[in-house]
Image 1: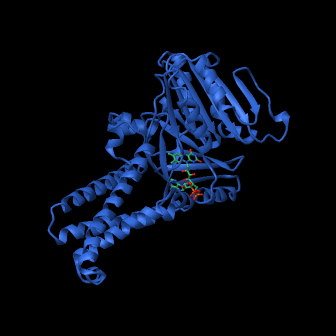
Image 2: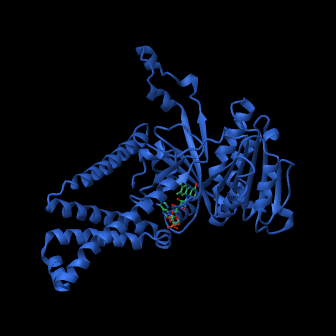
Image 3: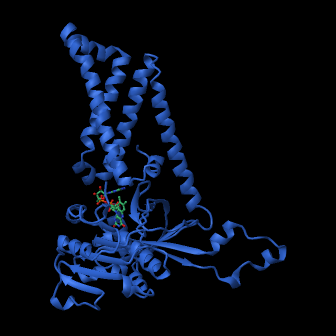
Length: 430
Ligand SMILES: Cc1cc2nc3c(=O)[nH]c(=O)nc-3n(C[C@H](O)[C@H](O)[C@H](O)COP(=O)(O)OP(=O)(O)OC[C@H]3O[C@@H](n4cnc5c(N)ncnc54)[C@H](O)[C@@H]3O)c2cc1C
């Protein structure tokens, strides 16, 4: 369950977040079973022969030594994977977690092997799955990023401690709402990757005057899929909020550049996840701060689909909570495009809540479909108002702080008996 590409995620139709939760709980159960197994050996041993025999076994019997190493590694994992440690020292946690998992699995395998127990083949199968998954990931990263000049990342500083990253992939994939990708930037962090939601994609169609080139025409070479893809320049963009590790290092590096922008080589791994909200009549999207990057692609897809008559959606309400109006800058070009889409006024309403405005002058509503308010939203009242006038089934989604997610979840869950409401959450953390 440690792999990013476990087919069960797709087959069960569950999110990576939920799968991760299962990873944690199956892990805890396995550790508990390991502890019970150990106690079932040690208690009768102490009762019948005393501690000295237990100590002697742990010093001399390879069977007991390897089992104890495996169990110790499991217990180490149990303590170091607590949420507080995971979130405070994520990268240290991840490295120690993987090392401990190696000792745990290796210890259990040796424990079984010494006694010639056939259960060791289960461990071998697990290792094989792990190696295959890692190899596929590695080959995919190479395929997506190598060739066609390689993948590049343009980074620009935005107001409010944020950056816009524009990914120019060597081999782009089809952009869908709800996708995220892992970014490796060896010039900032040698091998660690960080997940970010894809907020926007631009498809610049190839210039027909430049294709095919003269020599290709002359030789009558047909264009293959690769040629066509390299002529279509697809870029994907995301917004990164500065934190204290990788994102802080990147922010400082870009700030020190003379023009506040940086172009660097990067490796992109993805896409992971995607969500389709197009079958809901009403979609209510909540975002706090940088969580807007997860919601913008949905808004774009639903408004475009409404106009084209390809989605069931008749009403989209975006509620975005920001600390100051300068955060609007993060998505200004994309919002301008969305607000310019045909029939947008018939389907989209945007409610902006500014929690720390510097003055009341900053709060002004440009139109009845884009309204700005000071302070925090009354989540339950907003959900209730939309449920009251909902068309068809309704999706309530949230991406933002934990407290906002809790509030929105409570508000939506409490009304599930009244209306056909589904709740979708993206937490930006695990
Ligand atoms: C699916 C998903 C989508 C995300 N999308 C965005 C986005 O669009 N924009 C955005 O600004 N942030 C996004 N994040 C959060 C982003 O990944 C972290 O803020 C970033 O990795 C922090 O890096 P750091 O070294 O500066 O963090 P730190 O300051 O060291 O830690 C801050 C937090 O980030 C988490 N974190 C640190 N490193 C990693 C890592 N390698 N993998 C996962 N989590 C990590 C830690 O648990 C901690 O809670 C997303 C996270 C997830 C899981």
